[in-house]
Length: 420
Ligand SMILES: *Cc1c(COP(=O)(O)O)cnc(C)c1O
Image 1 (cartoon, rainbow, N blue to C red):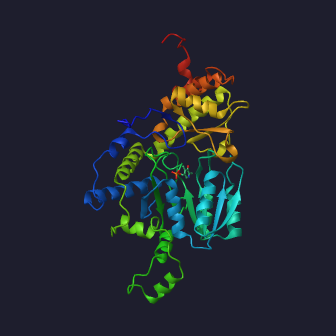
Image 2: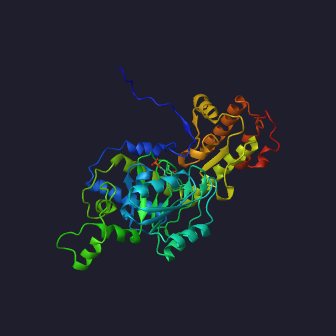
């Protein structure tokens, strides 16, 4: 047979996504297929919605996944509320801000942007001032910017948007399940999460949630069902243009995920199983404990990287806990280091995009990949590879610094080298 059975190498994946999938999720994916209107399956769909609300920390009626990679969630929410000519403000602090601009422009929005340097976040007051100046219908912003390892504080911006009657749409693809994201408390109207990052589920779905402020717009853009709408409703509806996309039309998706169960697309059964198990894992661990776990491993990684003699990139006050950006030392070929990590140690770390390409490495500590043995392994391997590449690290210091975080400094006392 010219094409042998699939054989993939075992990798330690320490990128900001996709990350290692929890074995329980992989098992759930091999569960037999059910028809999409089978009550056994619609029960599973309802459970997924219920669990999503808990993970999103919201009472929103609507919380369900879009079939497609994470950006499909961004596109679904934005295309369902943007009508041509609508003003959208996008504060950009990294690559995924540009993606939001791209999507908004394709749906005919008049996009206004403000930018800050990559590696920084916005002072919320600067964003609020701009919102007052532009007076947009929507502010769309990234929460955890994977490209720079920074996390934008959102609460003040959310409260201001609500007061000013502006819709706030947030890309929390990289942060959901790894650090606090409080949809209701932060006054977020529409939010997109990711599966292949802190949820430890494969790529291919985008869980979203939105509130009644967004639902109202979606419903008003829906075609009037002949004979049912009142004249007043009809006039209201006629002032709105229909949603261009069929696949991402949230009014149709609502009718499929809601009690009407109207056919739209064929649900991606195995991915729903995967998401259900991923969410079950999050809730079983508990949100607080899960966020604390991500912080501990981040601390160990950061301590190790610094002890090795490397420097961190970006505003550490507003660091995204699940992505650590490291400056590539002068004279070191970042890609050669990544190549050796992959080829000799079977570890994958990431580089970055645009202005940061060749300048930083990014190490993810997300979901199932965020484990002690992975942190220790990546630190040990990085040290070995850097020595090979001619960078004089502080030998042996990285693992000791990480172990100080994990087992405490006192444990070292009295345990002579070689006594174990
Ligand atoms: C990864 C990521 C995306 C895009 O996800 P895809 O699955 O590649 O579509 C969008 N936004 C942020 C913040 C991300 O980290």
